[in-house]
Length: 549
Image (cartoon, rainbow, N blue to C red; front, side):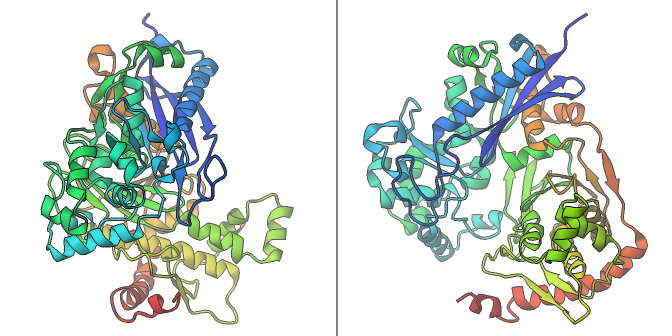
């Protein structure tokens, strides 16, 4: 009898990396390991103690390789799976998280002359040092009447690679003068493992302004900064592979370090959130995947390019080969509920939760469940972190209307749950109106497995069924799906990501269907939400922008 075969999914997050070992052909998760980055996030000081400016968020590239080796060797050891039985591996990564490197892939921060230069290190996705550069880019593109920003909701984000590269050019010109490439950390890790420089089309399309047939025209880039066209041409690369396509095989050195076979196929990388789409088993249009975490990321596939105003991006083969990938998002989900637990939970409620050995949010869910749909007496706007989609305005602020002397903490908590659900509905309805119907939704992330009340409110408020993915590790599983596709059928893998996703992701573990009676109640409250949404978010007043100033 033939021994079972396996694939590895490597999930590189903000604070740690995870390795997930998955069995072929049924997708059983046989082991996982997590390892925190030794240097964490460098947001206040460099490794040598030198202070960093406000808004900086750097990382040490050596942490990625250390965590990679630690997690893979541990998961193989603890599972007892021989390395020879691992067919392939896939990688997902936070983005945009770029670094400058030499022609042999050596990060510039490893060189003594650049060790103390912050701009020579990895700039994590949440590095916010490129505010002026993003403003200059967007002003230039608006003046040029460039059509392509419509693919990204109309603007380039300061977290993306063009602003970060321009920031490096202006603040530390010697770094880019010495650099051979300025590339995503995901591409750099694949380069280390395979010895081949390969770029993933996911990060390039969503975070690098790669338009499928080139970058923005030189004359538009030059409007922002005369040096930019040359930097783009020299540093960013021009050939890209979608996730699931083999980027190369493991080098002998890395095979020995990981305990795997030399030549084991490595997939082109994918952004961590986007890996959740195949990790949830979604490989066709009409089904949306929402990661319900600290924030929300909404993704779906399409067979044609439709420029949806107010979304984060539409990219050909950005998520899966053969499809356009669409992305939108909510800036606050878990953050919103965590804010309540930290700042609005009365001492008596905290004491009750402790006495009953309950998480405070579990207690609030219990109390809020007793309030009928639409009967909280409050209407809230879920903009505690601004609005990502569809208004794309980080300056917007949260709002709660309707407080009275009978308002209880559970009324406020329920109103926040409903506001987050209405924010999701705005996105779903917007996709629908633009010709991209959403039949149902598959969810993953921390909230999906913990807060059943919120899942039911989502179903009731949107009128769609919400499925909870089988796994709590959808991003890592999605990376493993890509690894199985990269291995190919000749090695015992799959013919592509679609086939691998359908085989390995499995069926949802729970489904929440809309309750017609609750739906009717929420229609009335949603109309009030939209009155507030349009008044404060679409020009009825600039009050929310004036308050912080």
